[in-house]
Length: 202
Ligand code: URA
Image 1 (spheres, helix red, strand yellow):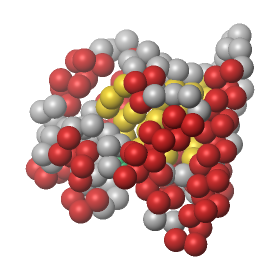
Image 2 (tube, helix red, strand yellow):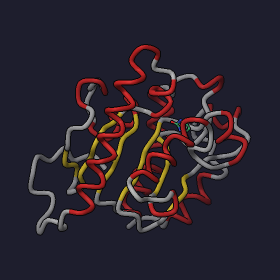
Image 3 (cartoon, helix red, strand yellow):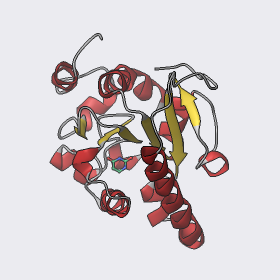
């Protein structure tokens, strides 16, 4: 293990590796159980996250918290973070070099928390973790194995909230993916986990 979560968070708190440093109120590193079995990875902090220093505290975060509750989990039971730790201006998409600058922090979070299940929320987190230019609407709900961890891509809660005509079906899909998390948590931990398809990246 290279650095502890605490060391990584400390280092990130004054990070100037990319241009997002200049527009942030503060770095939004991650929250939750440092030994969580389930990790959620979003895209990047929004307005409220940047102000409060905690991921997923705005409307999308409230939906995430509610969905966790529906499967008997609290925010403190899981670990929640983002691909980029600083708010992109005007909530624009993170740029490839910003994602690359932040990647060591995310890799360190995954290594330290070592979750059994990684839930990627939306296209950005999914593409970073699977290292493939996939489309979330095509692969959501499928199980992948990356370095022995089960990875399940699902819709980003913000996309579901703003989904227009698709919102109902996307919400149903998101709920069903949370049920999959519950199911996996109830399954015994497989011996020699990681023997399936490997998409090594972390
Ligand atoms: N959207 C994200 O991707 N992350 C957050 O922390 C909040 C909204």
